[in-house]
Image (tube, rainbow, N blue to C red; front, side, top):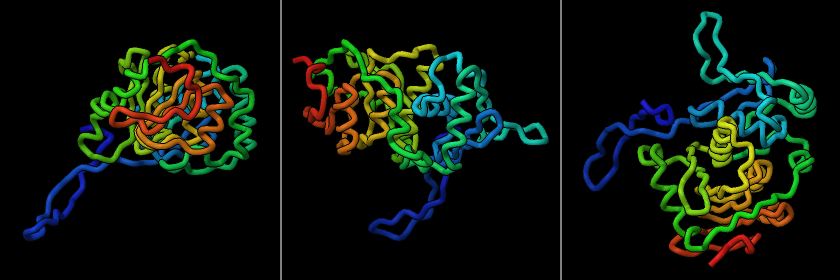
Length: 273
């Protein structure tokens, strides 16, 4: 069965008598990420693609900076040898070990809800320390932008079952979908899709467009900046801080991409007619 869904008992209410039945709901479970055995953060997420989620999350936290920084990542095992699917132990290498130690010393152990991606940080400045402006020659036709919502929606297989998941997709300049992931949290879906490409050896994503279902918050733009993604778009609105960051970091930010129209909040020069 799809790990992203769980069966639930329901009562259907309509014009006639109430009818007991069964349905499926989007799964939400905690994932504890440990760094070298030490608890780092608990993320509420949809099960599946946990290694990709952890890689994307640690990349945005700037603990991972190159593929050599990640020694291994695997689910922990119980004392009886069974897998513990909600605990992922990440082993680091090189200078990433020191960065992790500093991060552990500078944050409290928290639960990051599926609606919050910047929990447990001392300040937003921490997230942006050492981050460069996005430098990319990517140009995207406006005619391609308006096709992105339907192309992402067509790839949301678990949403088709539950109606309750966000999605993030990476597209090329022709509008072809390169990678997609779903999760109860928008920022988790972004971490998964970026982490998937990073684990596959694509450390630079300067030729990709990130499209998300729902609004665009600061942390989504921040994750795009760290990954070097030059264009971020969504079907809903960006926050004021997301707009400010996009302008400061050289990211093209598009919102309300729906029904053949969209708004440009930053970086209009990357869009062609």
